[in-house]
Image (tube, rainbow, N blue to C red; front, side, top):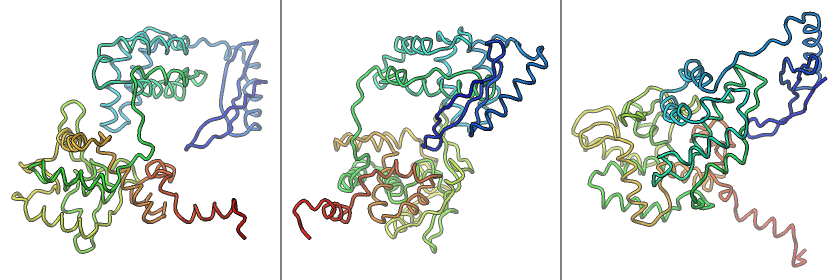
Length: 384
């Protein structure tokens, strides 16, 4: 009997499972994973008995499948189930699979050495010389997604051969470390908002930045906000739709959905935001539905937003280069102010508190009370 104890990660927690492997005359015929050892043993004995009674069921050779075949099957069966933005993101990475050394490898021969050779091939790819590229980690993650799908839906005996070593190999240029406190401090944000006011003719950028910073809204949620979703009397805004920017054309599209089910939520608006929104409403010449628009009343383009935000970060010598830093900053400052993880989680629209903890860094949980209690516990000075 082959019952193997394994460990899997689920929701960030390490859990034990048991894999039952059925062998007949030294050849593995079936394999399945269970939560308990008892269930694994019962299934193993039943399958072994059936194979011994019906020898014709055993020794069935699996059809030969190359990685290119696996990729084609994934595109037909799994890719259409993803959101449009995710589909375009994966399709962008497929070029590194179809023309690379992996395409001609049989799935049964796809091992760690093959992945290693593919990463070395990536480093010789013309895009590796791009100034902004420092890693192929996103391509490795796409490969991991495809191989995990293959194991779950095509061949459960397949072992995904991606290791920690491969993830390290993907970084072929030095990447400067992130600041430990991955959020923008209030004094940094004040001068940055002021810079946007003074150096951008269109006030939409500092207003959009302020809205994102004081609500924790994603850039797609803020840009997709309609006037019908804002209640001035109740001082609330409903997040029920987003703007998606097409990966190929870069054009914005309004979609009546949110990123996840929990992303649909109510945002409480402060007095400052109410005043800003009223100013926008009064200044808009066209009666459009969108709150934040360009000078023509059209939806904002992501590259224009990113260009405006990053210009301020560069001019002020701040280390940020992403619109998402505003969401991190909101989460951290909200937790510092309230000490209420559940309310911060709800305002961000996160499914689990573990995700919120990644946004609101642990530094936000340190307070004076913690320091005083710890000092008292050590009692280094012999105080009674």
